Length: 195
Image 1 (cartoon, rainbow, N blue to C red):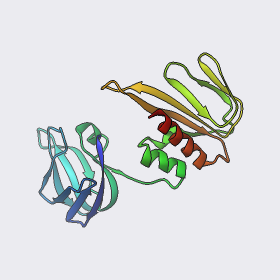
Image 2 (image 1 turned 120 degrees about the horizontal axis):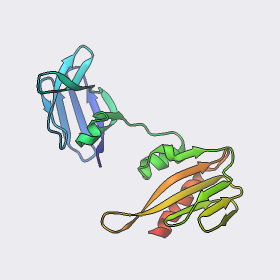
Image 3 (image 1 turned 45 degrees about the vertical axis):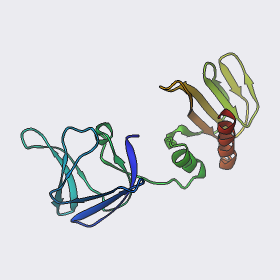
């Protein structure tokens, strides 16, 4: 995993970062902060608006900089690839129960949830792709035609590096007035049956 959930508490001159694993990182002016497999460390500098991380190039020029947040829950980069997109990302928990389940329990992005006027349509199945819905559906060789209902969940089964089958949810299509608890139960039931 390239990011870790952390809790940040700090002032203008000191920042304390607590990770989920219990590790405590203290950042203050003049300290160096190194992320995972990066070649160069960040230097913690104090500015008028608080603490900043700065990374310098060969000629003393600043090549990366980012403000250190003062408080809240954030996702902290633990590898150089993740740090390229920012060391700190704000972590929020959605209010919608389905989005919260997808983000917090399944650890998937909430953009897989797609709202539609009607879930009726043709969905690709075949190979390791399959569909679960609460409406009437007809399966053909490579397509599933959904006639009605309030949700459609599109799954894909992929083989991991160690040879085990892993399940990913490609898309969750929901119509207005859907019951999020039914969708969550359908996913949980399918996962329990599959494992």
